[in-house]
Image (cartoon, rainbow, N blue to C red; front, side):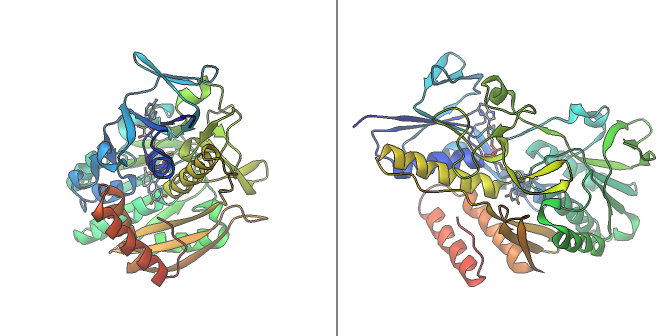
Length: 413
Ligand SMILES: Cc1cc2nc3c(=O)[nH]c(=O)nc-3n(C[C@H](O)[C@H](O)[C@H](O)COP(=O)(O)OP(=O)(O)OC[C@H]3O[C@@H](n4cnc5c(N)ncnc54)[C@H](O)[C@@H]3O)c2cc1C
């Protein structure tokens, strides 16, 4: 048998799923190598519960190695370069050769792109920042909390809205609801524009029911931390007592330097196969740029949101395609653009939206009534994701699938 090496670069959501799925599908003579710079994996959706004190930090992180299927070779290192001509990934002191490469390096946060932001704003978009925000919320004695989406694209279109509602719920639980104002600013014309006007209106109503004031079409340009003021393009300055930012996101430079990216750094892929323009190189998850039907401004095409659900399914598709090719079968698995989102609203309730993001002429999504089941589904998914390989993972998986079947939702785990 002709032995192949598949290198997966980045061991977050997409990389972990791709590596594990490849290991499951391929004979042990083939090598699956996972390169990840961080030895600890954190479950990002739980950063919101970390922020409100509903999770202890140690409950939402785990050693990366415990999430990896036996037989996957893990290299804990930061890759510095991809050399597509010699088919290798360069890590300090070593070049790791590949027959197939799956790029899953995600998106980076870049608060320094907005003058004044890094020194003035809290955030719940990383593990460390969510912890800092939790302490700051506990000590907060001011009135006006402003959440601001700095720019597009950003991870998880639901998260800023969830963050605003969970902060509102946090103060309600402490009996301080009437002493706090919560405002959400975004450059977008409505909540989650990719999901269409009906769903946007429903999310607006959810925000209003929690007392969150929504301010669309606000593009932040700078922050004056001394005066505690945000500056927006073409608007008056806005005062805040606490600022919580969804910082600008950018693509890690490694993709650009390898010649895989578009002019802004994201990696265009074939939307069905996740192939990049370079042979045997695939990309999945947040690093990709996938245009979808519809426009949210006449000259701006809609892009597939950056979300773990997509990274997960795309990784399964790529693993299936590569394994089929190696095993001498014609690859047939295709990414169809289906996805879902559980929108945490506080009080152990969540909304649930799902649908087809490739539908013509624009994505077609449905929103189910807000309820406890969706919140429980998210908790169960969190437990499943963070559980190590073995019996516990299998049991939780069965429970998740049973729940999804009972609720008649098209969830695949
Ligand atoms: C607060 C919050 C809430 C969220 N909630 C949800 C949700 O409810 N549902 C949902 O679907 N999505 C959610 N998301 C989004 C989701 O977490 C991301 O879309 C998902 O993690 C993307 O997966 P990925 O594999 O593309 O990137 P990541 O999971 O970010 O993984 C990328 C990995 O690559 C590694 N890496 C980068 N460069 C290198 C290098 N040079 N060498 C080695 N390793 C490298 C990084 O360390 C990282 O581990 C949320 C995100 C946030 C921040």
